[in-house]
Image (cartoon, rainbow, N blue to C red; front, side, top):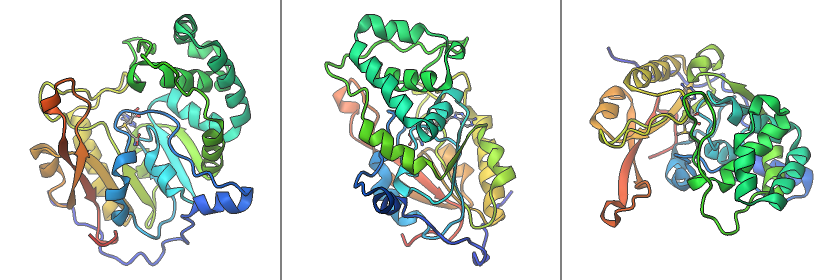
Length: 305
Ligand SMILES: C[S@@+](CC[C@H](N)C(=O)[O-])C[C@H]1O[C@@H](n2cnc3c(N)ncnc32)[C@H](O)[C@@H]1O
């Protein structure tokens, strides 16, 4: 089955309000541009320069349905955004940083003052449902900055189970960046939802950026589950179908994934850009270095290659 890319001019695209960073500066007299405040596996911070030519100049609402660390959101600082992820603890962090950043900062400062191995495991053992949303948000940011490699991993019953990391002096509360993130998030609706919720929402001229758990490069590198929700081949096919349906509707769609015969075949009807990325940290030096990834574009309205 071929998926025709949308070819109509985006006459109805709404006015772009994409320079939120400038807005932050003008409204608050503050130079700080927000950067992701969580360490998240697959974060796109280092790839943004290669993605930049392909972000459309004009778009309506920006959707990021695998939000994770939100690197692309903080880079674009769109005028209107919907940030979603299937992980409710993660989404709660964005909601609380948007709506109650000073309370999150106060709790993080308490965690920072008490930080040691005993405090880490006490906080890790807390049941999120017994805490207030703001306490849960501060808990996740604290654990994220002090746990091993900033990993987010849960056991079968959904409890966070990453051990303490080996940092001598971790930054637990970067108040200036959290405040800048809070300002950037004022334009964002936050939602716990599976990725395909965008099918109900996105309209012609909107922009959707998908950064799913990647297809593993080999059978030994099969880290596809960031939480209890595995993301296997069937999910990858459902995602391609969602991408295609949006493209056909005139939504501007972009998607990252690993560079494999499977992903190239899945997106063969779309424009595929090869991106050069650093290989994930590997204890064996000979396995470090560059690998390629793909960036898939849904139509020709993106920037010049
Ligand atoms: C690769 S990470 C995103 C990285 C992120 N864009 C960044 O720059 O840091 C993938 C995210 O997808 C979420 N996820 C996994 N399965 C999902 C699903 N079916 N629907 C929505 N989100 C899902 C995970 O919770 C995780 O946060």
